[in-house]
Image (cartoon, rainbow, N blue to C red; front, side):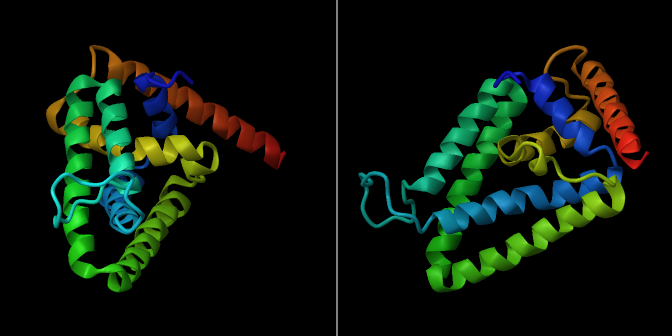
Length: 192
């Protein structure tokens, strides 16, 4: 899969997220997972010293991941990707304030509870509504890296008719249907 091929990435994601209830669950839980991950990553050692002392921003793994995600999203699609990049960096800023005010002894408990709750919701969404294992079982990196961006696209497409380029939605839908059909045929053969 080409690294910056949005159509292939979104079709892969869509094949695992075709049930409306499962999609809604992901819309609710994906960004809190990212946010709380950034909260706990706030406590990793700094990668370099800040120019301004005594501020809540630590340039550590959380910062690195937020920048990496933001740049990747912007490279995938200029408009929606840049918007998602902005949201990602906003999450890093907000998570830094939350982590700084909670302190590690409380933050890890809040993060653990939120992560368990959100991941449980997503697994239940796949098991009860999608009837298909989550994408992370087939492509861990794609699932973790792409999920926040796809959730944004899931909102932008029906709400505003957004397409990264003309025909995107039609081509992705055809790929999703073909992938789901192939998965169902494979599943049927295993039962036989």
